Amino acid sequence: MSETAVERVAQTLREDILTGRYRAGDRLPSERELAERAGVSRSAVREGLRTLAQLGLVEISPSGARVGALQNASLDIVGHLLDLHDVPDATLVDQILEVHTHLFSSCVRMAVIRGSDAELHAVRAHLHAIQHDELESSAYLEHLHGMVNGLVDASGNFVLRLLRQALKLQFWDRLEAQQDISVRMPQEVLAPLAHRLDQALEARDATSAAELVFELMSDHRERVVKLLNAEQARQLAGRVTSHLQHLFDLPAAEPGAPS
Amino acid sequence: MSETAVERVAQTLREDILTGRYRAGDRLPSERELAERAGVSRSAVREGLRTLAQLGLVEISPSGARVGALQNASLDIVGHLLDLHDVPDATLVDQILEVHTHLFSSCVRMAVIRGSDAELHAVRAHLHAIQHDELESSAYLEHLHGMVNGLVDASGNFVLRLLRQALKLQFWDRLEAQQDISVRMPQEVLAPLAHRLDQALEARDATSAAELVFELMSDHRERVVKLLNAEQARQLAGRVTSHLQHLFDLPAAEPGAPS
DNA sequence: GGCACGGGGTGGTCTGACCAGATTGGTCGG
DNA sequence: CCGACCAATCTGGTCAGACCACCCCGTGCC
View (cartoon, rainbow over the protein chains, first blue to last red):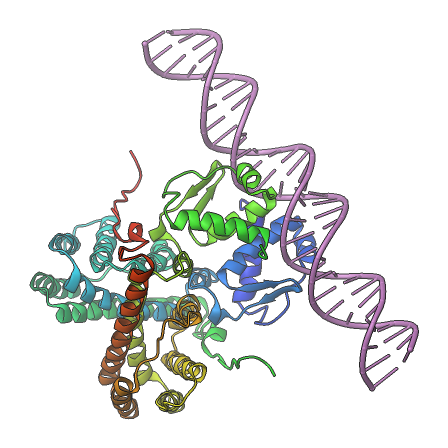
């Protein structure tokens, strides 16, 4: 309603593709037909299709638009996948967090090895702040994200920064918007790890720091996934299968050019 | 020339933004003015802007389009950054490969821990094939990519697959199109590492496998960057500064809302 | 049966128009 | 002199309708 017409078109098609209603390789209806169906002009449809094409969800060719394989789409579809259902798909979240864990464990390694003293000091300041239990949730998150941003800064890797930002925008901000999913770790778990991490940062012990972050994020991941699974099970009355099953079992058969 | 009008518009604006001609926060000219300048219709400009907005390069608001911060853009801009100059920016390539190295080292760990015997066997088959020196370059690359794809399959992580695909499409395919950049490792370096990796995969020794892949990819990374630096230095008559310097030294100062 | 030829359908582009909301600049009242 | 208000103007959002080049497919001719 409130959205713009092209957003409506894009969202409808996007959901149809992401949920598997259109399957990879299918030919989309023509722009004229889509326009008529949605009750909008062809320009609106075209702009919507453009965004989907940029996401890698459709491929527009002079003979018509075809649905692309989800596995070849942009990383940016992750956010839209999470939006498909009221409660984010637990399996997908688990996989996001897994990548996140490994990636930022490596990030810490780079930061410790290459970061300047000032950068590491800024990270440690955020780390100290996090351990204050009285913090409001918003301040807690602010310091948490500040610390990660600081680590990415210290790593000096622009690609890593893009990845961090993509994951933050698509994942964290979405998850934090749902208050029923508490992502805050209990202090008795956080404190000892944080303390050791602080020491590792001070001593510039890259391996220890990376392992500690890995541990920390793995624990966090377990908590989030457990909570999501419970939530999902409640909503679906026990059905725990992933909504997005079609993503995970892929034939992956993709020969080169047909003879 | 041969391109479509909206692609021309998008490319022009994209390059202007990526090279820093437009800086973050700047307001773009109005659609009507852009259309007049480029000699195309407003519809073409609008579609071009849509793609840039989807890339996170511009933010379109009812009052006008503003340039976004590059660090908040989609990961998909990496490919366009590489396209900016004849020879890809060595610093950027180095950072891409660094992320790549860490990511797929972790990927191997997941694959070894969770992959099925069949999946690991497929990976090893590609690994064996790579070691045949007589292979043509295309077959070599096919097996190399087949192996990585197999690892991603074995890891069972969809997000990882998206990342792999994004990096492959944006980075590898581009680099391999430039024959002057030999990305093939000498057999005397590859063979011993590959042999040990094969053993680690067979024994399902995750840590060893991850370390070996890390080593392998680090070596590869060094070679590529060294080659690119040389190439860049030749073309620029000794000037080795990165074209994309504006990406790497960021103030990163981004407070919340202005008072 | 094979091949050339249309015709209908597709995306790509343009024109010109209207709307609602934001911006802006000037005017008027304090 | 300053602030509030208001109207002209500009912006993006949308639409209808038209034309083009191209591709695909079916028909009919050879």
